[in-house]
Image (cartoon, rainbow, N blue to C red; front, side, top):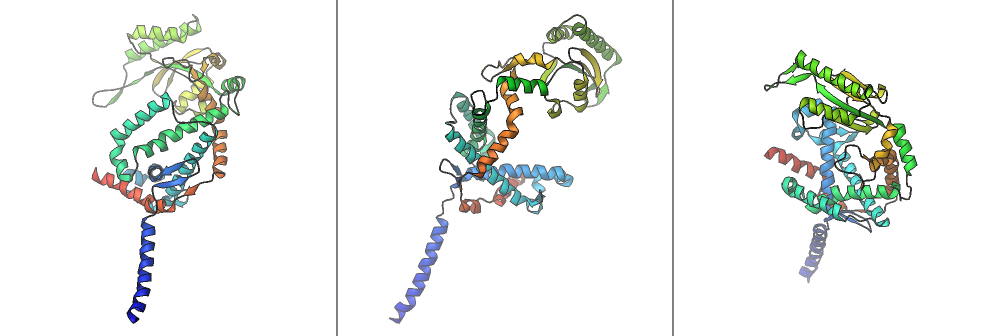
Length: 376
């Protein structure tokens, strides 16, 4: 009798401990965030912690030259700060934002009858799968990121983001931008440019840089002046100039660069070149030397380019003159769209799986990624 009384309390304690242990071990960590529309896997969460870890390393190297010199594998992320926040906490917060953003796209897609399907999407999906298998599977499988999780976080999320944008602002959208509005924005903000360039520096087989010969420079200067006169005095077009250049140089490749851009936002042109284009009168060709490069420059009246604005299904992939209507639409509405998505995120009803967060921590992602560097 006394033995039974002693055993029962111990049995009760053991049973309680066993139940607590089994419930802890049995928690479902297969998902990270979910709504009544969509569930994100643990792989989605891990992918975003990995992506934001890479972003964090980039930010640290930009602000810390010692970190950049030593390499990312030597950075102790636990001792770093980003935006006055511990780097690990920053990564966690940014990965959480990514998950909520993806769930927001999924909900808005359902609300608007948008699905990730069709020939174009399936073709991209195949490409992403091949990319995963060829370049990412070894590392991502160690992290716990499957092909499906990778595709959902990268391809599908961005695809839905674009389709929702078009559902709002394209011609038949709920907040449609008319052709008149878009054309006016284009002519008010964009600049047309055309140029052919010739570098006044040359690099030999040993990597040494020298000036081109005076003879070559003089010959190209003569040719460029001729091309400018073709436009300014003979009424020829830039296409005529390209043809003449290819004849003179016995070249089969188009030497010209042309575009319609918002100059202040453009990052592909040097600041000095942008200044020359901005100051250049329209309908006039000039020859300028900028940053050790000789240029034949020409700027058309931007209003002449409106006729080349095409919807995506009208654009000829071989055309050098077609202008994407969607591209202009993004310049007009990206800021508004970002604000719209942020507002939608605020009202999103979602659940977070703390068990998943506890198991697949940011530090775990960091440790596994650092182990890749150690092995290579």
